[in-house]
Image (tube, rainbow, N blue to C red; front, top):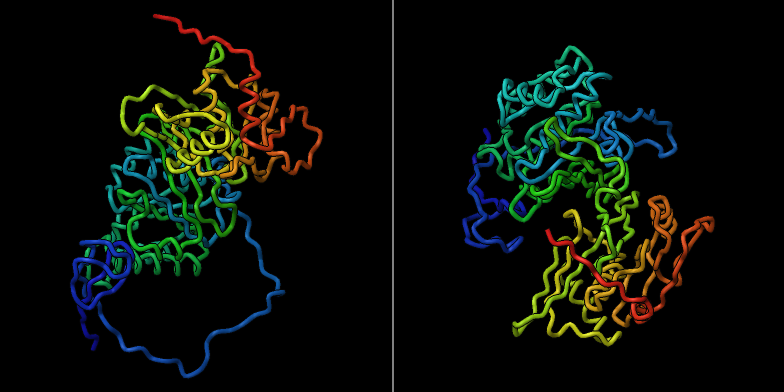
Amino acid sequence: MAKAAIKYVCQECGTWHPKWAGKCEGCHAWNTLVEEVVQSKKSVLPTQLQTQFTSINAMTEELPRLLTNLGEFDRVCGGGLVPGSVLLVGGDPGIGKSTLLLQVVAAYSHHGACVYISGEEAVSQVRMRAKRLNVSHGPALQLASATHVQEIIQAIESHPEKLQIAIIDSIQTLTSEGVDSAPGTVSQVRACTYELINMAKKKNITVILVGHVTKEGVIAGPRVLEHMVDTVLYFEGDRNYHYRILRSVKNRFGATDEIGVFEMTGIGLQEVVNPSALFLSHHEFPVSGSAIFAGIEGTRPILMEIQALTAPSYLATPRRTSVGWDSSRLSMIIAVLETRCGLSFANKDVYLNIAGGLKINEPAADLAVAAALVSALTNTPSPPQSVFFGEIGLSGEIRPVHQTDLRLKESQKLGFETGFFAQRSKIVDAKSTLSQQNLGYAVELLDIYRNQSHIENKCIAS
């Protein structure tokens, strides 16, 4: 007979503890241990080896990817959904995760059978949302409301049609009969995910799980949950803006850091085919403190505007505020400009903003940030129709970044005429008509602004 044991599990990292403690020894978090009852079972070793090996050169049937007809979603997934794979989609509450996945299965239901299983809403509520989104006409889409994982697996395996996609919204609401703990705990999330993964691999069904996120912005539950699934997607965005970004942080079948851009409308999420035009501001006259950055998100080039502002400071420690970029890296760029270029930000408050609310993690944005800072400090607009990209070292040198050709092609397509980047950048395609201005050190960037004719900014009063 199975013996019940009481253990304390950290809800942040999943570490087991024999007794309660205020601090987890695994992740050093406070007040995260929760009491759980675990049924210990006696393991039985097989009498003979059951695992079979096969040659790496053996022929394997490659199943075609499932295309949902939502180009941005298919792009982030690596060109479509892989049959038998398990995806985890996380995001803030109300950001649009359920809306996106309901549109995905409704679009694919024209090609194959799909199910949408909700553990948070009743079937009537999901049906109301589908009518509002105008996706209730999906011919092969069926809805269900359940929270018991064994019941869900049995219903999927006994479905009269061959299912292609199954949506589980959300994994934190499911419970397994083998675990005696509350829904959403580490043990329940891990056990339910394990059973769904086994079902997906055995039945060759694509399973998409919805995961809640914590206040830190990571998916709730142990980190091992992200290691178990094949693909991890984050649906992010600012509530003050109408667009959302679907970002891939793990993908066994495609590129990581790929993004898809959607716009939230009254009838659901609409694809944004050209994100560069969305993140660029069109000024009627040249303004200082603005520089265009040619970035790469996954395999997609995106142009975005970096805005900087310097203002007189009356504080002992001037402000250094950054929105959409790492504040520590902003301080480093300011230190390089002060030490290597002779500029002074000592009595200035510095504000940096990525237009449109986009977040940048790429070091290639250093040169564009420096250009915006120099432009704001000298009150000189950036060179017209120019883009900037390059990493800045502590000695002031401009270091080359990858995929220079792709950045230049996207800039040329959008009508830009000049590109500023490192001298040692590798350019394979020499057919670009974009004027290439190679920079060796940040001092050369300062000389460009000094040699420009000053353009007076004009403001139109209302």
